[in-house]
Image 1 (cartoon, rainbow, N blue to C red):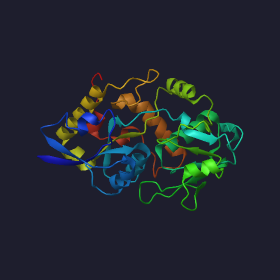
Image 2 (cartoon, helix red, strand yellow; image 1 turned 180 degrees about the vertical axis):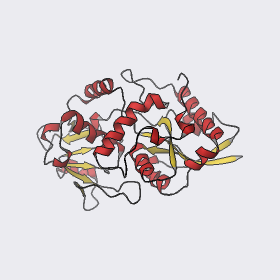
Image 3 (cartoon, helix red, strand yellow; image 1 turned 90 degrees about the horizontal axis):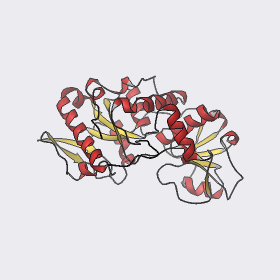
Image 4 (cartoon, rainbow, N blue to C red; image 1 turned 90 degrees about the vertical axis):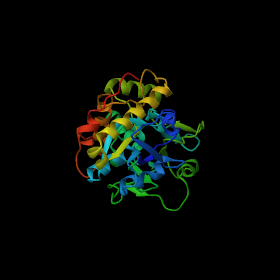
Length: 299
């Protein structure tokens, strides 16, 4: 039987697949034993180790723009969330910080290529009129794609002191923190009333700030469309079994190209504004004929 090297994190929507509650007669998924998927993303885009892989969208965009042999499947993977609340400051160290007062401030980011960072920076620029070049962006890691160089205006943190410690100590004025944002009253959102702002943003744009989707090896997608459709079926079944509730009326892990088109278009716009891509991409450029045609039944 065909074995597909697979990277797929442990989330409600993937547990039925990971546990083999749902299987296919065409293949077995050989799932990588990784505690944190994003630490494996460099292997996805810099080698051909995986046939099926969860991947952060900015990392996929950069790989696709650079000609890496990957295509996107329109399946959002992971714990969906809004992004507005991810930009925080330490109220114990400074007075209120708002988007309009970010100029000249030092803002810590894991990496300029992190998808959460691209979403937050795009929201600041397009919805709050922030000049991104006026902010001192301090990064702690390289982008996942080998060969990508941080654009001008990004400085690298010196030493090994963690981002969060620097925020608490006042070395950073603010930080963008996605997964792992502490529930700490000292950390206050820079964007006022962020959850309400996120709901209004989603309604206005018809989009949600998705982070991870599934990428496929391009040769597999071209040569075995039957396998692609079976991978899709398993993922759809896993999502159906999980029955995750909508948040404020939004499905934060939507499946299907049309369900994700507005969100992908928005993130591509932000990525291009932020000089994150080697060449412009459209939403349809992300897919091949097989994955572009995948649409979710009622989930």
